[in-house]
Length: 339
Image (cartoon, rainbow, N blue to C red; front, side, top):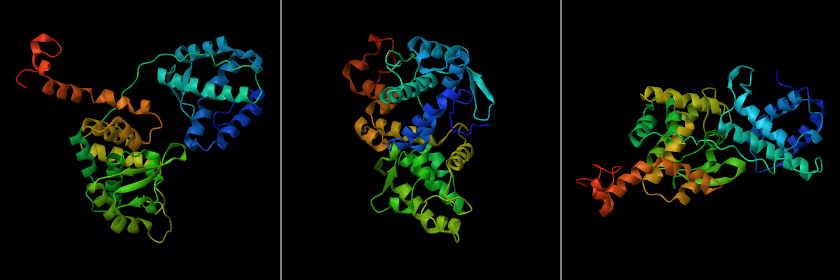
């Protein structure tokens, strides 16, 4: 059962409650954080509160850099990763999860230091553990096409699902961005949509002719049938005429992926990853892809360049005069011959 003070609450460590509440209020006041990010920052501190209680810490004077290093070691070796309902998920935390814990700690202690609760920030000398980077899974262009074209537009739900899949892949939208769309965000004439992304930042995303046709038919036939007598400006609706939830979109993507003969692990972000990768493979500039995805930093977008290396290598082998001499490099042997 969750503690009444909210997500990530310190629980039995009562001395932490005033600081937790002040920090929570400061996050709520930040307009650049989405509700989901705010909730994640608080939830990511849960193991830290448990560690402080385990170590018998009763005040901030007992929290220093060596203690935080022991905390990270505990996360990597002894901590139990628990699901929200208390069910054990696995032993220890993965490197990327620990990186999130460090980020949450830095945010907390910057707040405490700025507001005079501690004399110095113990995370200033805390280094981030190195971990392998997991590349996102992508569909190839044929798989993506098969998936988005699998729903046959014979029912209002199928019309809706086809339009959603076209937007996820054709415009590279996030799951939260899709469910937040309103009818007046669409501009079918110019094939663009106004999107509210992370931190409530707006951007314009573009889509192609297939997406325009799917959206136009959904607006004409599918949405009115789903809306019925209700009134809402939400673009995508469930069978009862209410705005579609993120979980519903996740479920419909999985359903159509399975029907398309793809892996059941396909999810909405798989289509966003595929959107970015296929743009880069088609010759799009990284900065343009960054803008289309709504990434604040090009560093976030650069992960997709790793996925396009096979295509880059193929172009190199076909185009560079020295690449055609396959016997000069065992790594290229045979691939350049006859090109």
